Image (spheres, rainbow, N blue to C red):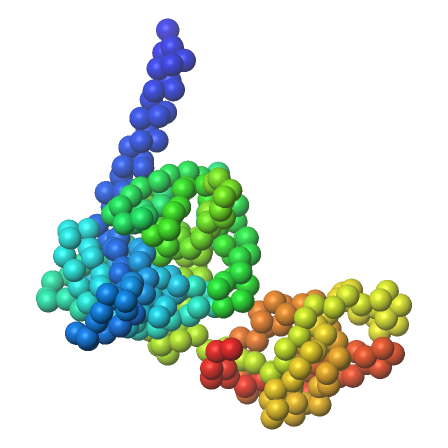
Length: 329
């Protein structure tokens, strides 16, 4: 004789609860609160003592490297990290990348090792699997919400204006202060860094995939920044008339209309002109600015590449050598 249906439900709910509890017990000791002050030193007043940012993060290594969001630490002159045990530590920014909204901190500690977590493989994440968010929303420390992975491979605009790819969507509730905290599996593996929610929508929350985090952290440790290339144009997406697409045998029906060119930039040296429409870069179709950003990686710095540009019936193939970005616009 089998169990009644309600008994089966109870077993499933208990199993779900135990899975969430297990993950929280593994991860929460490594979750920290991050507070920043816009001013440093002792000379402060009530007017300028506003926080530079407040959010969450998690310890990635026992010697005190902490991952969080760039927008949590941006503009802060001093950072304080509070662990789950209530102990406060001073922290310094090792590297910051607003284009992926990630930052790496190093905690100053007096001996010993900090609890830490490991990054999982976000490529293995399945839509529908349980996702658990841990953070400090509105200052309520180590708050836990759970839900499921709603979608993978989303795109989200960073505050810098660049498009972030491979974003995980979840309905695990996030609120201000959750930013920078981990999104984890029931095994306690970090699969994302919670970064944004859409208000006033319900259950539309987003996390930066752990594989992106792994890449960015490795570069921030090495260089203190993410190296990217640029060619020096400002442009906007422009549709191409069908007759031009057919005439030039173009692979896409849109490109980048060049609105301005920086003097002495790689684009200027290459002979690119205002109102040209860029349709390809190094053999890859370019349908808009985001496509070009994805292609202008560290590997392109100083490497001779080709740009295909059209202007009416004229089609030109230009040689350009992308340079390294040395400042942010």
